[in-house]
Length: 213
Image (cartoon, rainbow, N blue to C red; front, top):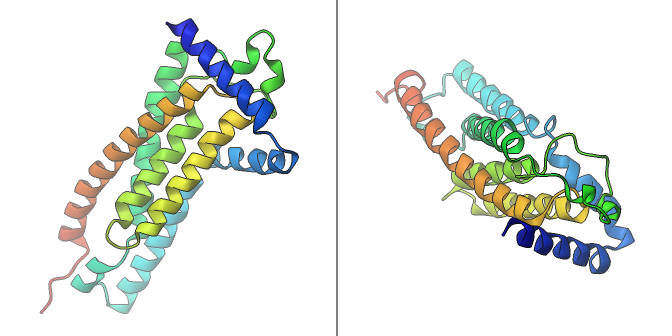
């Protein structure tokens, strides 16, 4: 069963390499695939947390931090959702599943070394950590902007799909790595968003909003 799955995975990767590779895309995919590196992905939630905190402090100094602030988009809340989801993904994917399953990278299979277009990867193949991360981020954006600006969720998912596909394009993951990574990322995104949403709402109601006079 596993051998059959691997053979199908390799056939798909060979098809991508033989029929969907174009010189103009090589540099683009190289760039896209590095947008979710382990040292880059955590930067996204940090940026949102910093922006949200700055807005909060500005309103607090101006004395405008009242109930009307509840309707404003909260960048910090989105940042914490992303951050907690990424933490769940780190524990489940990088610290648990990758070393436990220890699936070799596709380019290490005899006769398939031609697949790799970027540097050798230090971790095992299953699941795709990049896919986990970008789908966690995409779900957090979609969850945080629901009813406010759904286009941002769509953009986030387009970004996630591009990064996930780039892992196949550059030959460092099997399709099943990416598919399972997307599923795990979505689950971690749900857990992170629900946890932060519950904690954040409770904290906000008690410590941030001032009741109207």
